[in-house]
Image (cartoon, rainbow, N blue to C red):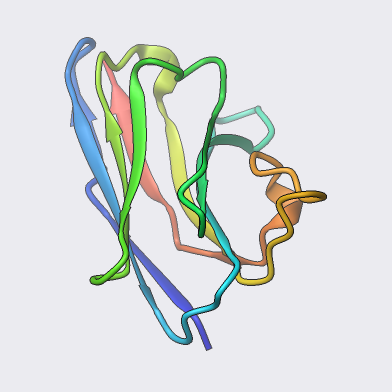
Length: 126
């Protein structure tokens, strides 16, 4: 059984920074993908950034150049460094994982590809 525990959300002024963390527990799979998703009121859940077991990263155009996804492989913690935050970034942010990942077929920013989800953490930019 895999569990994802998120932390680091909060309120920040425009132009500020936040770092989200997602601690993963359970079996370590050889081929996986982990990602950050967000959902604002009245909008669909969208992929923000993802990283697979090979270290390859994918970013949404809206956050490219401002957000950085990374992972500590030893501690099994996923991070999302968010810089130059804008009010449009306000949303509930979710950590997600797919233990059985095929990079040739799976879409890293598609919520439907991920089977494991954290509880979500609120990010508010004013």
